[in-house]
Length: 277
View: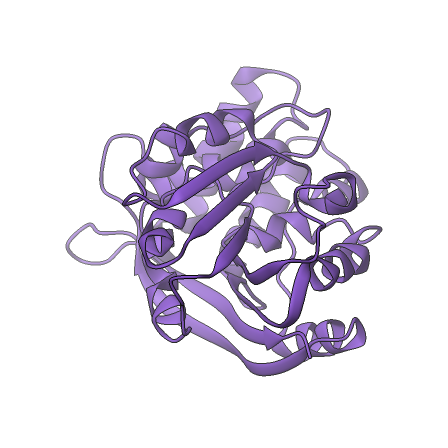
């Protein structure tokens, strides 16, 4: 669920994620339920975050290795109960899986990822090599199943972020270069996966309205802070960051708030099941 690139600031915390995006792991349930998990399966979870997603399937298999580059999220993942299944969690930059012998042994029955690939694959210089490494890490006949944000995900938030940062003096070129999220179309991802050797069995974009959390550190403001922490660092003072957040919330309030005060966004996920021949 998280991915902090090696050598960079760790923007993630389990508490912040739970407050602002606790709904995210639930969206993968449909995907997980469609996969034939076996008691003998060894599964690699890429961008495992705090382990909440891992815990939704771990008890059905024999072993899970979760990898993520956020030290704080890995520390939290190690504290959860996985129903007696053997689990391990390691700090790994998922753009460079080839650097981890524990990942690249080629014996994974299944590889999965939830709400992380839109961060990991944002780096266009390592995007295809990451997909190739996932393919190489698996057994022949293995399954790669994942869910990530896809094309059309919360476009109003992207626009608001761009506007607020530019309005606070950041050149548009700088904002574009620092943008940390990749929302691919199903057509693009199918071609990319097939180009590294996968057979794509199912891929689809799934737009749906999602209610944001209503707790103190959640809602629209909490979600913006969560997904935009790295981009907000383009502003040089806390005062300017707060000003930009308030401006974004003001811009988005009318389009996201319903009559009862609840706040909603259009969350577009990209679900996929692919097989290594």
